Image (cartoon, rainbow, N blue to C red; front, side, top):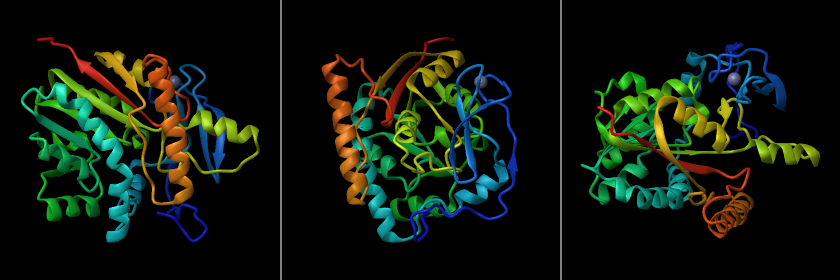
Length: 295
Ligand SMILES: [Zn+2]
């Protein structure tokens, strides 16, 4: 939700709280970057980057009721923007279909579910925004449960694939979320996460003295690197993490679109030229993780 000058409109009187590092429970984050009155810090113990202090969970739930656009035009823009990323993810998941039971967490207006249903998957979603949930149900007839994920109370070992596009950076306890994904996945199932990796760009822009709001605070509560996300996934029991650039978004705004194509395309080219090893810092990434065949 952007105001006239492009600044995010922050709910007034947002209740804030001091928090520990949600990865290692450490205290005493070192200040990293400021956006307005919001501060990203780095955990001195595990290097996790997170917002501290941050809005309380209740304040965030209220905030997300106005987070996704309400106008039809904005919804179409959002679809156009995400389409290339959804298409790449759908292709990537094809070999892991199993019985084709998929859950998309933070599914928004449901465009990814529409794509997967077209491809023959049995797909459902979880969404926290009432506007988005209504749209996905009314326009596409999709099965959407109200979030957060833990509230949906799915049985153990239920899904072949769980996906979450641009969700993990919004969560107050990403480890709890990953544990829940692990629990509801069948043995042999796959988790696909798409996430921004903003800190390297923030560091560069700070050196150049360029002000920006790239963390999108207070919407983003943390910023993962591929290394950190792999550590978290493996700690929970996921195996065979596969990292990739996974395409780029196409925002309507010409400047943003040009930058996305330029950096996303460059990052993708370098990834393939390096034999799928080099993950260009600062662009969004996708990770695919596997739940082993344990009994
Ligand atoms: Zn930590």
